[in-house]
Image (cartoon, rainbow, N blue to C red; front, side, top):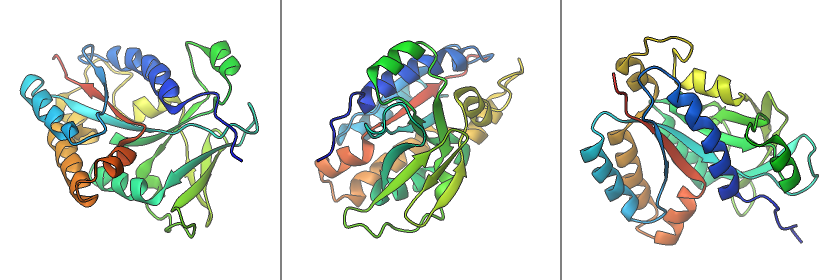
Length: 233
């Protein structure tokens, strides 16, 4: 029987986004960045339509959060699960913007460790979804893959595919070139991150792929959020 997780995906998502936002807002021109917890139903696409109308120059860093298995506690490698349907869907989103779509693997499976490290959750690791494009389909009936995250690298099984993982600051500087410079240009952000249109089209196609099944769509979007950056230069 699986042990109930102490630390939920949503808890990790909220706390780590709270750490990421100030880092992005410290970049010249990006002080108005904000986090979007995606609606897990048909209204998600229409919500993006509304956002486009009000934030016409926004770009997105997409984050797919995963929560670690409860055991072993506070010990690397931390174990996570990803599944084929969600993974292939994320690969579609990452196809043209590989630096704009990241898995997030926080190494926190106890509340005590989360509390000890707060507010800086430095043992959180990011892997570009694109770096696991070669991952073969799972042989398991539920389509799941085991991921072992060591910090610095992660391996997806059962046919092992290794990927480099990045810490929080490295992940942001990789996705937002120029984080250490003061003259960040809109064109650079647009090249690296997702546009409103990229995200809207992906949401619409995702809903069509699951044949408008709201529950299946909710599963695709579970743990998915974006940081929206509306440059003010």
